[in-house]
Amino acid sequence: MGPTTALTSVIVGTAGHIDHGKSALVEALTGTHPDRLAEEKRRGITIDLGFAFLEENGVRFGFVDVPGHERFVSNMLAGAAGIDVLLLVIAADESIKPQTREHFDICRLLGVQRGVVALTKSDLVDADTLELVRLEAEEFLRGSFLERAPLIPASAKTGAGLTELKKALHDAAANVVAKNAARYFRLPIDRAFAMKGFGSVVTGTLISGSVGAGDEVELFPGGDRLRVRGVQSGGKTVERATPGQRTAVNLAGIEHTALKRGMVLATPGKFRKTRRIDVRLELLPLARKLKQGARVHFHAGTAETIAQVYFHGEKELPPGGIAFANLKLQDEILVLSGDRFIARLFSPVVTIGGGAVLDPLARRPMLRDTGRMAFLETLERGSREEILAAMTERAILGLGMAEIVARTSWLENEIQETLQKLSSAGRVKVVSLEPLVLVTGKRFEETCQKIVEKVEKFQKENPLQPGIMREDLRSSLGRRVRPETFRAALEELVAQRKLDAPGELVKKAGSGITLQPEEVKAKDQIEAAFAAAGLEVPAAKDVLAKLAVEAKRAEKLLQMLLREKNLVRVSPELIFHRQVLAQLKERLAGYKKSKGDRISVPVFKELTGITRKYAIPLLEYLDRERVTRRAGDERVIL
Ligand SMILES: Nc1nc2c(ncn2[C@@H]2O[C@H](COP(=O)(O)OP(=O)(O)OP(=O)(O)O)[C@@H](O)[C@H]2O)c(=O)[nH]1
Ligand SMILES: [Mg+2]
Image 1 (cartoon, rainbow, N blue to C red):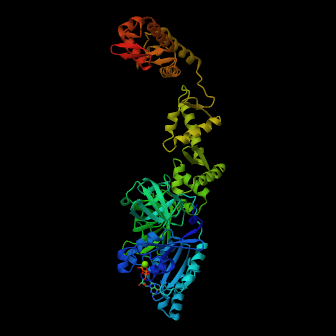
Image 2: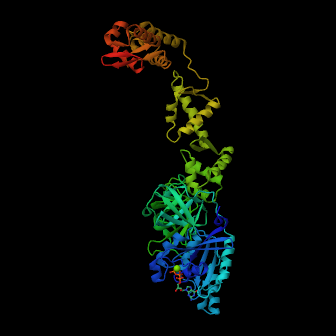
Image 3: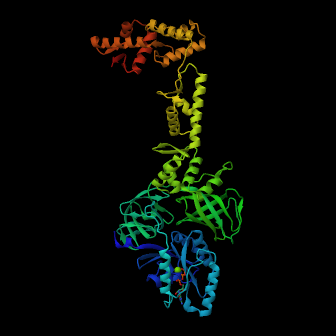
């Protein structure tokens, strides 16, 4: 491993009103001016995200510098996702201004945990003014995640306060909770470009997992599988980039024009793009109330789209309110459970709130879905066991591994562990491992019970049938019972000796058909009639008519003989005894030995002594049985 991997990597994001000195401060701290566009240099403002690095005392700081202009808040949002430490910049000569508030609200809603406040341009004000601004800032931050953050007067011009600022950034970095590189890889793309000699490159803040040359990654929402040619972090080539690093990924097999901000690179085959999500939505105290069906700008990661809001439960959300909502997105994007998002009003375009994704693959809201609120509550606060149990409960057809991963982002071993706990407590039943299918213990019991009932009912109504056909039984349960669940339930019932399932049949354990003495006799008579007839068989109805039992039961007895294969139906009208057919096959084999393997219809009639009425259906039957094969006017004996 290279030396860079030994460093702690921390992303510092600036925030603050336009012209308050964010970019100048980043330059003073790192030596790199983050503005890179010609237009930015000409106008003296930041338009899009800028980046700079500082390596000091074992910490590698990646700075993301954002624009303060109100028209570029959407660019700011793409940078704010993934920051570990907020560098809130307040100019001492202007104090708190609208985008100071808006940027701060955004960082809070995105769940940023810690930060440092720089009172910049300290060289422009006297000590009294500086003190006043400090008081205003303290007041502004009271009760927030920055309540205890250091407020440091600084000047990019004179260099005052820079040492203290760096120290404060180190202190904050020491408290950043390290993100786990063993989780699924995810890189929201904030830039895409072509590099001479390299091809397509995308950059972003690596928020989860790791990536290295040779990896296969999936591009969302498109779904392309791409190969990683190389990875850089902080301008240096690395073996693997880890979370909390600004990362550039060189991709093979795609034009840079097909890549853009808002797309995401991720571990292949794990996640699904979505247009419907369930969320917790929080409205800012100063926002206007939000009505059912309202449309808002939706930002998550570096992606941006439009969302229509449907509240579960209430009809509208008052300022400062919090509610569960279903969002219908205009474009397909990749968001995962726990991801934060920001909502902005249509007009005027201002930030009104945000929240967290609870279910990235939500269903369309339905009025009769009364369990949804409790389900979302569980997703938000529940343990893994509670969440998995609740998900299983709501998955009528069972729940597979792929779906659990896509909806929770849990690793497979975490799912296995959770499963073990749940199945040993009897709360879920693993009905199949490959593919994984889970049903609740309760639903499994119900299915078993239903199967027994169906079999009993069938046998009661059809006393002369040995049992119900497996496939008929399964389809009688309806589509809500998955084939895997049916199979597992049947196995369980056989193991419990409640049912027998020989071959394609399912019947009550130990049950057989008990015939009345006159039925036994009648059955024998039918069989004997066909055995005696040889190849010139009588019509079935004539045989049955001669019996002492009533017509319906006689028909059942015939069916039994057919099922037992003692009689064989050769054509709709003609039934033969098994032994007669066996003799015929033998005779053909003898013919083949002495006369050759070709036989014509007249010769066949002569050989068997039967008329065309029997000969043609029999030959067609023999063709089907692959005893003979038709070849023009003749048959080949096989
Ligand atoms: N005197 C003085 N001027 C400063 C200081 N910091 C920045 N400036 C000046 O303030 C102006 C704006 O600085 P920027 O760093 O571009 O401000 P910004 O916050 O990045 O602005 P946007 O990115 O457009 O939001 C520039 O002319 C800087 O030279 C400082 O500490 N002291
Ligand atoms: Mg700037």
